Structure formats: structure tokens, C-alpha cells
Image: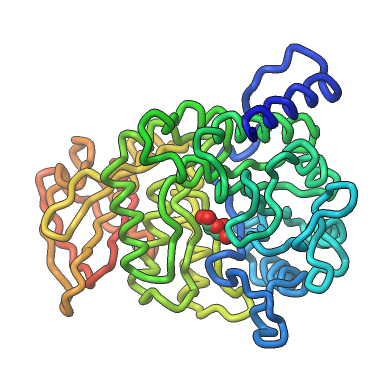
Length: 412
Ligand code: GAL
């Protein structure tokens, strides 16, 4: 039923909006490096009782307050430009023309006015919908309304759509997500397209078609939601490490694997574990969507989010997703080639959570370094430059429990 509806909407769009000779693929020219921004979900969830939780309630004032901080605290200028509202922004019913409406109590000015405010700050607005009958939290989904919703978002001035896949048939997703991509293209407004489709089909080999994901989406979720804990964070890193050849081949300018939001500045990670997340999201060329309350950020967390070395690794124009070289005895090494010839980012993670720091003696070969006589290293967290080191020399690293050591290595 939904499948034929998606086809019907697609044909109508092609008939009425474009005409002919359109190629069915993403052609929005966006996301040449991993997108960066803020997303409300992990930190603010579906908090809609504003009497009970006025400070955390999902309202237009909350979104505006985060926008203001993105500018005044330097996040926008560091590259975090998307500000994305997730689930629970809508009223429970569409209007009498079938259009989506924002919750009138929490978003009284409407999304268009909010987009104007966001744009006036030099930021871009993201929004959430669901491909199925209802969103994951039970708000109206786009089933039967894909084309109309795409046009509504464009009319409002939306710059990013995260399309989830709750309450939908996985067999319809390829057609439906491709159709929505086309509808977005046909609005003429460049809208970054984030797909959750891969996360819903990834366990069904016949449906897990990364060529199609890449052709259709700028960024795609393919694993569980991140939660505010080390276990959740490491389960994602380990999933990427264990499936890296199936994932990294499809990442690059225009299209990115999305391991989910940054939980830095939340409640669940130690400072060392926050370093692991920021370091690994840089290594994996992951989209960087912070999910924290920007009105209340510890200086260490802010410094990490704005660390120039880490952002440069993440945003490196080569767009290579880093690979795990080895994982032995609760330690692992990852490597990411950078655009500067011979230059690599290298991360060593100590995943052991026993009390004391551990000592590692690692050879350049164990770090995946190319065989050059000498090289220099920059510690990305401290910006301390070391070297030159001889290729024959092992290096000692002392790494805290559940922590990371990360360098940029360059031929000397
Ligand atoms: C999940 C999604 C989360 C968040 C949530 C909202 O399916 O993965 O990132 O968007 O829905 O209900």
C-alpha cells in the first residue's frame, strides 16, 4: 500500500514539478566534508511537559537559546552550522490541508519564523520526520505525504531533513527514501538528507545496499542510538571497527556513515572518555552533531569540541574514514590518511577500565606508519610537537583507562 503510494507521489512530482530527463540520485552538492552542528535528541529527548521541566522542555525558546550560544561561544565559527530539531516538535495532527504543523504551545511562532531566526544568526535549520505512519514518538509520519512534506520543509526554509524509519515496512524503504530524496531535490532548495533507513535494514543482507544509501543520502545511521554511557559509545566504535570494510568504502565527500550524536558535555562520560569520542569521530570522518546543553558546558568539553587539530582531521578534504589496524588485549590502533602527502592521524585506545594507566611500547609498523627514515608527531590534544623519531624506534605511550592517545604523524 505504502509502496504504491510512494511510486504515485514520485510520478506526480516528476509530472508536475520537473518534467523529464531527471536522474534519480542525490544531486544537492552538500556535505563535501562531514556535516557539523547540534541536534537536540540525545540531550533533550521528548521532553514536552514544560511545567515540569521548563529548562529542558523542547520549545522554540530552547532552540533559540542554543542558536545564540552556537554563535557567542564560537561553535558556529568552528564549523558547527546545522541546528537540528529532532522528534516531538510537531502537533499531533496535520492541518485541514494535510500539512504538518509545529506544536502550537511549544513553537507558537512556527517553524518558518524559527528558520528565519536561525538564518539571521548565520546557522542552518534541521528538522526531523519519519518515513512511516508515525514518528518513533508517535507524531504524524510522512507516509502518504512525502512530496507535500518535502515542499513544506523547503517553504519553511529548512536546510536539513533527518528521515527516521519507525512504524514502516523495511521492504518499502529503498523506494520511499529514494522518493523523498527526489522530492527534496525537486523543491530546488539544497536540503541535507540524513537517512535512518540503513539502521533499519542493516541486519537483512538483501536490503543492506550501501550503493543505494550513498546514492540517495548525504549521511546515514547504520547502528543503534547512542546513549549517555561508555558502553554505548564503545559499542558503536567496535561496530565500526568490526565492519569497517563494508562501511568505509562508501564514505567520502557528499556521503558519510553516521555513528550518531556527540554526547560530550552530557552526564555519562568521564573527561578521558569524552576524548575518546571526539578523537574517534574525527578518525572515522563522522558527522559531528553535538547533543548537549550549550548554556552549560564544562571548559574541558568545550575545548574538545573546538579542538582545531581534531576538527582538521575530521574535516580533512580527502574524506577518508579511518580504519582499525588491530585490536588486541583491550587496546586498539586506528589510522586515517590525511590529504597532506605522507601525513596520517593515528589513534591508540586503551579500552581497559581497570584503575591504573597502561604502558604501551609500539613500533612505527604497529602504528601503521609508512616506512620513512624519520617522522614527527603532533599530539592532537595538547598540540605538543615531538620528534623526529627514527623508523627503527619503538615509542612509549602511557594511556589512562578508557582513554585515547592521538597524534598526527608526518615524515620529517
Ligand atoms: C530514533 C533515532 C534517534 C531519534 C529518535 C527520536 O529512531 O535513531 O536518533 O531521532 O528516534 O524518536
